[in-house]
Each structure stands twice: as structure tokens, then as C-alpha cells.
Length: 128
Image (cartoon, rainbow, N blue to C red; front, side, top):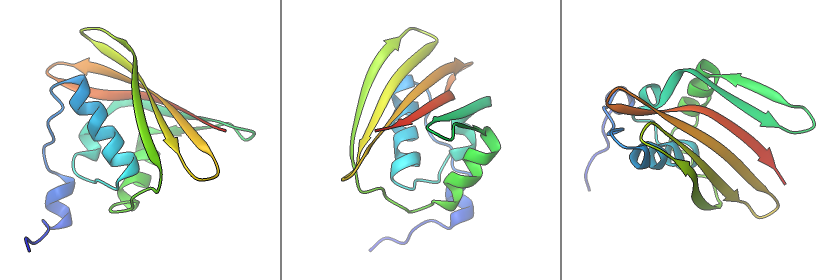
């Protein structure tokens, strides 16, 4: 069996974010599979996450990155689907649906091109 990379190496690893599809795929891995590599580089500096619920909440980039790093290795038990709602040369809006046993989480994700890399600039979550 191959040994896992040390945590400090994997968290600083460069992840290929050269296309919107790669960035979206990495976002799904980070948020649902506990992937920790490249978490810092995935999110735009002005990223914010809005959680639409009875207790609506907004999370900053730093709060989300810190939370995701704590979730390293944690895999969510859900069925994941992604749909591209809008796409251009410089941005993409995608809907990521996570179907759990008792509820569904919908995540509207906006990605933008910054130079040669794609980053997640916003996320809006809702629950049913």
C-alpha cells in the first residue's frame, strides 16, 4: 500500500484549477469528500457563503476555509449531482445538489477566472 502524503504537504499542494470544470470538480471534492489539498487556492479573496434557512447566515472565506480544513478526510454520505446553469469564458454558475437520506442541500456556486486560474467566488446554500 502506498503511504499518504503528510498533511502539511497535501494542504499546500498545487491543484489544477486551469478550467472551470477542474475547479468545480475540486470544490465538490473539498466540500463532500474531505479533500484538503488546495483549499486555500480554491476560493477567491472576496468569497462568501450564504446559508438560506430560518437562521440565515453568511460565512467569510476564512471561516469556510478553516471549517473545510477541520473536515479533512470526512466523506459525506449523500448522492451528488452537478448541473452547469450558466457558463462563459470568465465565469460559471453551477448547481451542486447533495441528496441525503432525510434532506437535500442545494449549493449554487459561482466560479470566476482570475488570470490563468479559476476560483470559487460565492456559494449560496439552501435545504429542503
